[in-house]
Length: 370
Ligand code: GDP
Ligand code: MG
Image (cartoon, rainbow, N blue to C red; front, side, top):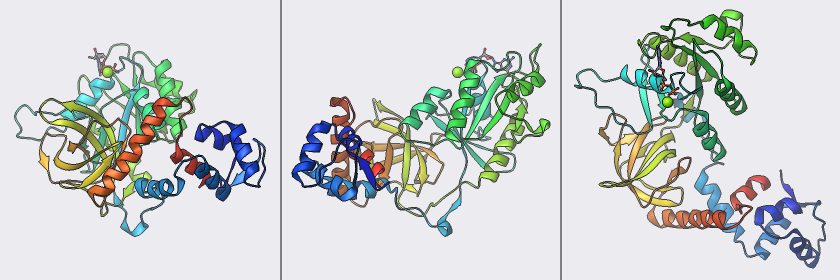
């Protein structure tokens, strides 16, 4: 929308609405709290209250790259990003481990797997799938609330001996709200009392109609314990991804999302970044949340140092000035001066958010005005 109500603007600025109406009166454009004002008037008002709107708006568009959509001709296929959700004890962790195990590169004794919060697996047809390692709908919704919609596909794990439970239903709701397709992994089919058919029937009540019943929801019977059905599950993901035609432009300055971050004793601040578009390279200067830095090293999910990371790849990034937060965006910028400027701005915003009850976000304001 190109207009905003005075009340909304006041909320976004964390100013009193009466102060805004007074200012508007003085400016010769009287308006009440429920009136809408145009973008120019809003900008004037914001400047009047001491917020530097011009620079912020320009900077912001620049920082977030929201406006610069990649041309279709530059898009190349990318791996789907998958989150595993489901009721407690239905086997999310076991399934993540089993799938990861299926990928251990032959010849690597013991298969030293690194925990970096996400990993990639090869499907039987040779395509790649990225799994986020933090199961559960809390991580999923938290990331979404922070504006980081990284998941392309949700795997709903349902134990065949236990059936749909409250958290299964929660997961269905979250995936649906996010518009993310669901594949159902019916787990523990090795167990006595396993009843996969009952699970399929119960799914109907939640508008998930499996293929066998004439719907388009894929379901795969698996056993994370006996490691059966894993290839089928990977195939189902590959098929779903193909339908979705997931693409990104790898040939541009990189942009990614923080999956997890920590302060490592020996290595300093370390963040696992899921590259969303572009190619992240060693030496790149970036802003990450309120931190800036230069990529000192990139480490993949196998613990190997790599030179660059392409879309949908999870990678550990070393060279951060501080520890960012999960859900933060990493953006590669042209030079250090720009990185510092953007980081300082974001830092200020973060501080404001902490001190003001109703969060002031000029970024949010511009979303409403744009
Ligand atoms: P989460 O809470 O969803 O992460 O579930 P876990 O992966 O921790 O599994 C809960 C329990 O179920 C553990 O004792 C697992 O060993 C067991 N389990 C997981 N998958 C299977 C399976 O396919 N078959 C059987 N029999 N047990 C399983
Ligand atoms: Mg678990």
